[in-house]
Image 1 (tube, helix red, strand yellow):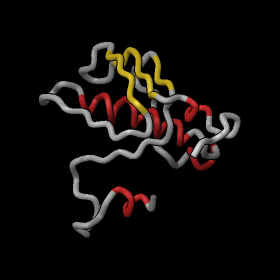
Image 2 (cartoon, helix red, strand yellow):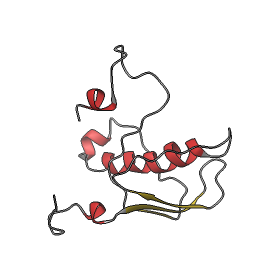
Image 3 (tube, helix red, strand yellow):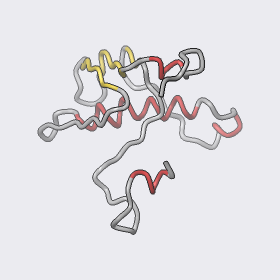
Image 4 (cartoon, one colour):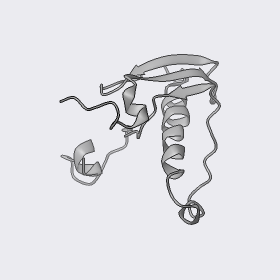
Length: 117
């Protein structure tokens, strides 16, 4: 299924999410390119910056961009999210974040059942 580039959201025209110069928490100018529409897993030893990259940088900016789409009135009731300490975040769209916590009371719950995807 192909979609005309003119009808795509600008961020969906990119095949990758580009992160340049990420400096959240213990990250030191991390550069990474993440393929879109793929399952991506971040692994590493404790303290290596996995959560800082995923939650404090990529997910935080995705949430901030989503919040900006709401009216000023609605934004007044939302937490004020600052931009992560990063030089460039390109190709970013809405993120679905899955962490280690149990999602829902049903052991058969999945990302799809929780998000109504």
